[in-house]
Image (tube, rainbow, N blue to C red; front, side, top):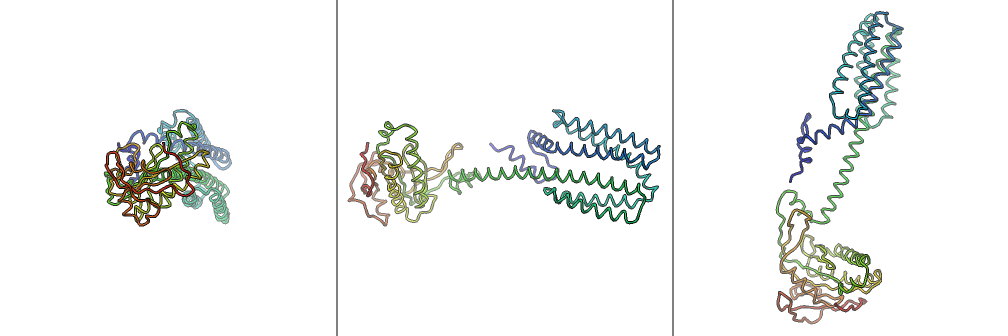
Length: 435
């Protein structure tokens, strides 16, 4: 089935006002975003209340009693609404109701508008319009700086301090009336505080988004590495495109390696010891596969199946297969010392055409099939302990034929008589009796 969440995200990215296609995803996104913004919503509310209180303190100094009374009413209502708004953010279900923000901010905007009307009439009587325009224009630049320097709050605060000092020197040089300067400074400072909070909010949320994206990228890379460890890259690309993965290889060499007397050994040692022994064997075989350009196919019980000339280029597949098998068996003495028991391996190799591909939709793995695979498995059982058995076809294809005895004819179950070349145990490898 297609990934509904993934497709919803992909659909929503291009548009500026897009929603997620899935309503549940949209709801979770909205709640998550509102949760991240919640501390800053409260911070904005506190800053607003501090500014409103500052106006209630300075208004009686400069305004007439009539204007001051009107402002006191509007400021009191604004403080009440803002305080109630902050209180509602602590409500357990607040995140689920964006309409609370809509109503509270609309009422606050109306009250601030009424306050500004009264203040504008006072400022106009002082002939200080230039300072009002200057505050508005400066806050536009401050807003731009708050977004540009988001994620670097210390830098922004230093910039804001320098900007304020320069601006203050400019407006006081003409010796305007004190009330005009005070209101301009309060307006500028209140706006700057909001911009500082915005700078902090954008920086924190962008860092949270980056951290999430970074962790997703890291997880995606780990998953990609895991998938590529199980499947060839070309097969992965075809699976993602919805294509059937089926390949034919005309000249491959299949290698089966298993432990001699594994059933008897399993009765002698503990399960943990046995797993440790198998792990050492398979890890050693993996290292040899990387060294000789051989592809590991899978492990089945104590057997290790590999192929040369499949997805991994290996030149002459027969030579690569024989060199790989010899390298694995050469590690038998070390495996025996590590495990504390006698260990024996044997290998069977056959060359010919194989078919590879991926079948099914769960626990997918790239596997190989065909008579070549079956014959290699049968040859493995004919090899001496710590030796190698190869078919005549593999012997003819190999350039390095040293170490193999005169061929013998062996009847393989389900195959018939086959000419087999046997390589005796390598020097230094212990002779282990086959079970």
